[in-house]
Image 1: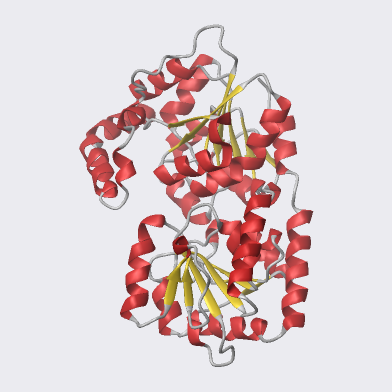
Image 2 (image 1 turned 90 degrees about the vertical axis):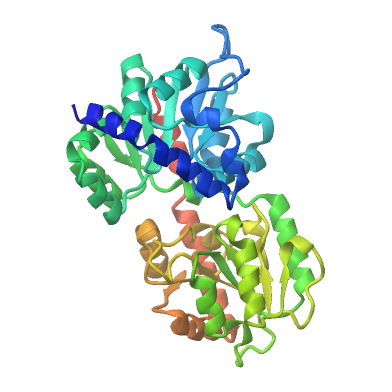
Length: 420
C-alpha cells in the first residue's frame, strides 16, 4: 500500500517534474536532451536481442558517483569480459563524466524516473542480469520490479548521512520494504551500515569506500605537471569543488592577496559547471585579476586567481597545487570528496560541514592528513601556515598519501560478493 501511495504521488508530481527539467535547462540546456529516456523510452534504439551478451547495469547518479564507480567498472570489465556494461545517470554532467572516463566501452543512458511504466520499459529494453546502485539510490518501484523479475540488485558504496537517515525515517514503511528487496548492501563505513540496518536492510556488509580505489589517470598527471610549469615557482592554493557562496567568502577574506604569501596563486574550481560564468562575474565585480583555465594560456605573474572552468581535470588541479581546500564544507552543503586530494599527497583543509563524507573527513584528520577550519578567516590563517612552512606541508602530504593507500580494496570486496 505504501508503494501504491508513493506511485500515485509521483504521478501527481509529474507537472512539477517536467517544470523542474525545464528550469534546470535554463542553466544547462542538456537537461532537455534525451527526455524520452527519463520515462523509459529509447526511441529508434533496438532492445537487445535474446542472444545478446549478458548485461551488467550500474547506476551512478552524477559526477561524483560516476568517478567513484570507475574502479568498479574497471574490475567488472576484467572479471566479465564477455558482458556488456550499462552505465545510467540522472544528470547531464554525470553522463558527460561517463563518456570522458569510459568512451564507447560502456553503454550510457539516463535511468528513468521511478514510475512503474517507465521502470518496466527500461527493464524490458535492457534485460540486465544484475543491477548495482551507487551510494544512496533507493528507488521503490525500480527495486520492486527487479525483485519481481528475479534480477539481483545491490546497493554498493552505500552511504547514509544522519540527515538522509532522518529523511528516510519519515517514510519508514516504504523504505524498509524497499531495502528488504535489495539483494545486499555494501556500505562504506560501520556508521552507514548501522543506519541501513536501522531502516530495515537485512544483508549489510562494510566494504569501504570505492573512491579510495580510484587511480589518478596518467594523462591528468601530465596535464597537472604542464599546468604547474605554466604557473612557475609560485605557491598554489586550490579551492576544489566550491559551492554557491563559498567563492564570495574567499574573495571577501582576501585569501588571493594574503600578505604573508604575496605571490600566491589561488585556483578556484566550482563544483558545478553551470556556475563558471557566475564565479567569473564575481571575480570581475571585486576587481580580482583572474584567468580562465579554458584559455589554456601561460599563467601571468600578476594573476591572482585561476578559475578552473574545465571538466574532468580535478586530478590535474591537485597535481599542480601545494595545498587543497575541499569545498562544500565552509557552508552547510555537506562537503565534497577529499579522497582524491589525499591520494595525490596534498595537505587538506576542510570546513565544519562534512556530513556527506563524515568518516573520511574524521579519518583524514586523525591520520594527520587534514585540518579542520571553522570559517573563512580560519581557512586563510591555516592555509598561510601551511604555505609558509614547507616541512609541515610535506609531513601532511605524506600522511595523506598513506591514509589513502591504507583504505583501498573496496572494488575487490564488492566484486567477490556479487552473485548472478
